[in-house]
Image 1 (tube, rainbow, N blue to C red):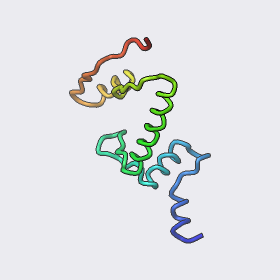
Image 2 (image 1 turned 45 degrees about the vertical axis):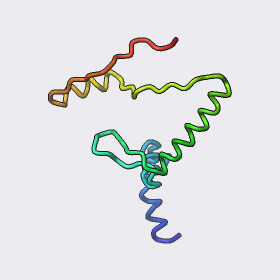
Image 3 (image 1 turned 120 degrees about the vertical axis):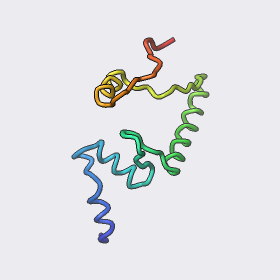
Image 4 (image 1 turned 60 degrees about the vertical axis):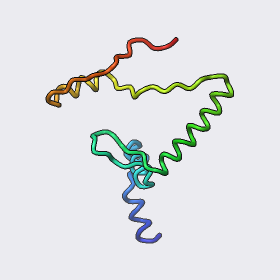
Length: 104
């Protein structure tokens, strides 16, 4: 194995050691995503976005085959995470619409 190839493998966490870190290492190394300036957020890079578009296209086809309709929802954030933010971000005031009921 070439030196560069070995280094690449050493920089990726073992899947059996830490699955979440392994996944992050893989998508970062493949340049599918990159970190943003906002803690906990990542930017989807062009190749990653192309994969996402293909996933959407396939799911859309399958939904329509079964008579289902697509819907777009804003990102849902658990109340517990918002409550945690208010404890360590001075002046934090969550301005959100609370989802209190799901389903039809």
